[in-house]
Image 1 (cartoon, rainbow, N blue to C red):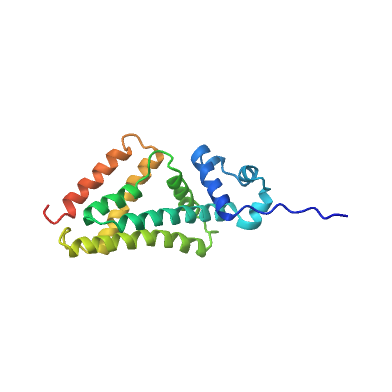
Image 2 (tube, rainbow, N blue to C red):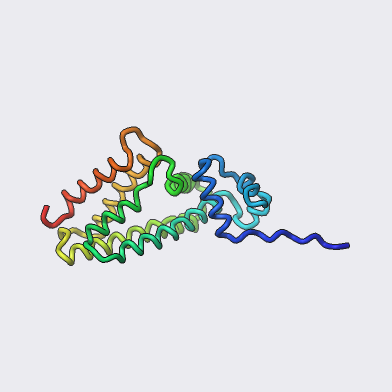
Amino acid sequence: MTTPRRTPAPPRERILTAAMEMIADRGLEKLTMAALGRELGMSSGHLLYYFRSKDELLLQTLEWSEGRLGGERGRLLARTGTARERLDAYVDLYVPDGHRDPHWTLWLEVWNRSQSAAVESDARDRQAAIEGAWHRDLVALLAEGISRGEFRAVDPDRFAARLRALLDGFSIHVAIGLRGTDRPQILGHVREFLNETLLADA
């Protein structure tokens, strides 16, 4: 009797890409293990074997998406030009593209799920690592601008924490489609804030 050959699991990146595409095309509420399995030609049980739970799938998808954003962030921060030009590019990358931006939709869901007491500390540590990468890059950019005399002599770490809190608040408004808070308006608010609080000649 011939043993049936198992269908090999798709590469991890293909699974995560498919999950992100489903969020972008159909919304997070349509992303179930069964629906993703159908998209990939796998059973939901097979997916659970690799990811253990939907929470883990969402977190790994977020980490994968953040890895791509981190590469883009690294390239834009390595450009030549003023620190302010690169800070504007950082802000552009941070703020969602618009209502239901898939990356921010995913971030909000992972944040929401992390409130559960059942969430493992490892998952919270992984979320903190994502936040930490954005923070460290911003602190380094602010410190460079201060050393060049472009920015006021603020505490880079404290200013970065406050700026990211502002960006998070505005970004949530854009991602959920809060009326009167579209992306161009939010970018204008942030640039005005930076002009008033950070520029050395303000």
